[in-house]
Length: 294
Image 1 (cartoon, rainbow, N blue to C red):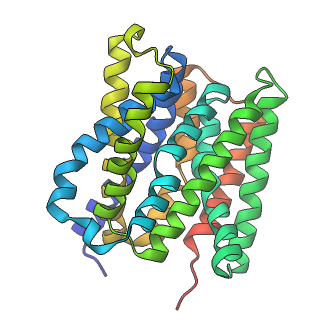
Image 2 (cartoon, helix red, strand yellow):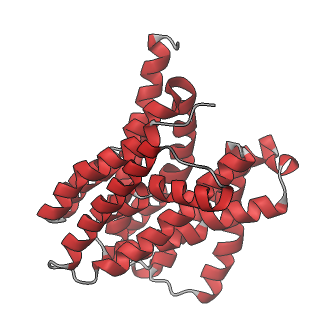
Image 3 (tube, rainbow, N blue to C red):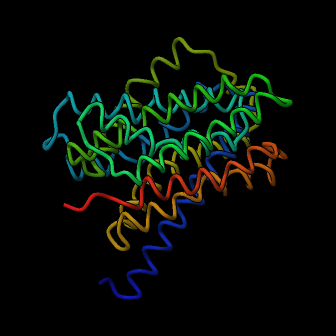
């Protein structure tokens, strides 16, 4: 059993991850509404993250313990394509839907993909949890699309695709036992090296006309917090309080993100979407907290 200090440090770390991932929903939605293109936001995210990760990767030399194929797969499913899909979602759907589909749907998608691909049989209680997640996500999607935001379904589909990519990324990370330096190399540096030249040469940009304060906020937050700091803190928390407690804390992201979207963006996802949150949260807990003992 970990001592009390270790538990407190772990809980502080996972609580910070919840705040970071919830804030990401609001910051990203604000960014796409500010006039910057999604390609600009992605350039700030992967450019800054790649720059920060260079000394870490050079120190640990993770390319020695992996292959180009694995790096490419991790970069595709956990890097730029995943990020761009999520930003497309924020163009059409409110921040609360990012919490539902980017974070909330991932446990159900991971169970489904794990079963189809790796024949990993989920427990009965995890199947029930996945069904509750699907019901909650469906309620949230219906609430927005039938209300004042009829094109929200486009954003929800983009969020769903991004969440599916991230679920595959998590499965690959676990299957290959990829460590943090390998993940940073794939998701940050490979992403920056491949994406930034394409962005600079071919993709539309409004960065020169954007508000400098918005540029600074997006650069600092997107480049430092969601992936780099979030992954490190998550790994830190899992080692100290275990994956079960960490998963329980992370189930709060959709709810916290919805409240932050209401406070900072004035986005009310609707009564049906609020009613969906306890269903979704319960489903996440059932799908993630109960793991098969081996």
